[in-house]
Amino acid sequence: MDRDTFEAGLNALIAAHGTKVRAGIDAAACGTRWDWDKSHEADDAYLDAHEAFLAKVVAPPPAALSPVPVVVGREEQVRGRSRGRPLLWHRGIKILIAARGVAYTFSANADSLMIDAGTDAELHSTDFDPLNEGHSVRFRGISYSSSDPGPDDLVKLAIDACRGVALRLHAHGITLSAATRAWPEGAPTFVDIVASEG
Image (tube, rainbow, N blue to C red):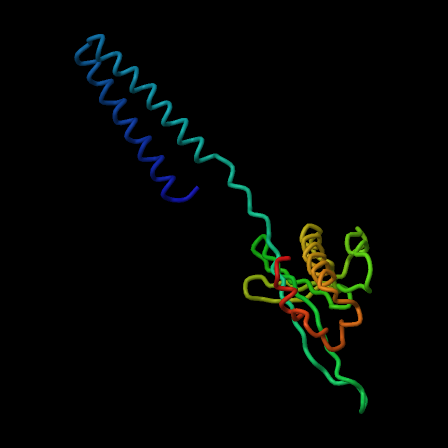
């Protein structure tokens, strides 16, 4: 509960209590049926305000929002290891997920997101898992890497994000041969396909 809601509920409870006290004093002093009726009404109103205030104070916190992965593409051109070797490209994605006050980063290489021409059935398979081993974490300004896969729910989100990228690459006709080679002419860039929604 936020401060404004708490104060509003508390003020309503205090006001109802004040009305109850004043009505009780009037009823005791005057003793008319009308005064006693007003006193009973004030008692009921105070009980209602009391219950409403308690309901707000002890209400369970709102459900946390589901984490939303942010996917970023990267590509870098590098030279082959020997003279005369063609230029190569290192392409991949990072999946950033903020959950429970911690920033998690997963990654996948482009070749694990691409398939040869044909059906995309393997991209829909439950065995599809293109994530690189481990993940990195940033918490309270400190970053560290772990070889552990990461929390199961976040790993699933990261894999689903990878699947989305892989399906977009497949839809644009990008095959495995483009993972480290020159990008197909006329196709959107790797980074643009990663960033697109569909």
